[in-house]
Length: 401
Image (cartoon, rainbow, N blue to C red; front, top):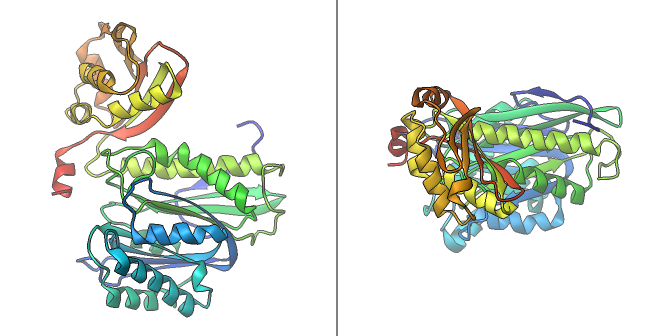
């Protein structure tokens, strides 16, 4: 990419300087898996965040929204197995207690502790287990604790999601790393997901928020597994400045490299969520071109990406382009049937709204792949977008019964 320097990537979690983490089992899940995570910065960090757009929001989201106003934080305490959503005044009190106890035990200002929860909605937190988990998580903090933390935030995930990037800023080595969870209830405009991005770079708080918001729009807001949007979705970004660089902002000569790294990191995490979606066996890129407007492109892409008829046809490995046309037709986008082109990878399935003549067997070979691209050209304008989605299998139903 023009204007950026080399970035080294790894599918692991290497905590940046000044960060420690832990993951412990507090008994919130039925088995003995880790279910509470703690991440702490040894120094004050600039903080940015994005949250769910659901009108029903967990107590932890409400607490984090309020704390974000200060743009400074020292860490986050996370529990899985219970969403602390639809829990009323008691839920907010419990979230505040989690931050208070974490701060007291870790020796950091409680008001600079953020809180996240994920799991079942409508059930009060078992605070005896939560408090015991916090008491175990604080002494377990270490610079190598990122792996345990990434395991502790999982719910229906089959594997942890973590990424680390290494780059230079002002000639100083910088680490940018992240851990996330997300498998079901995944829909654009934030999803059932938690993500924590950490860096030892110094970044001006406003620039950090702008950078994160732009990256989320092109990554976490581009994915869908099942079209459902959660009550708890949270992305938190901590930048503690331990690398010793001049604070990054849009005027800094290394800003484009950093900005690019954040975009790539969030996209890598987003795709890991789709790949690990509940019951997923195929990842599909839905690309819409030639829409009348950018908004039309969004409506068209999401209609196709969330169509159960389309997603089940992919599960059956049948290239039913007629279902794609149907989903386009009932979307809010302007669609003129006789102008629509549909392509599976490089093979045309539909041209001008009619069967393109490619043999079904050739199209089936595309749909049998674990990943392919569905390109839709509406031929009405310059609007375009991309959404990353998947098939829907019987296993999705079993997981969510």
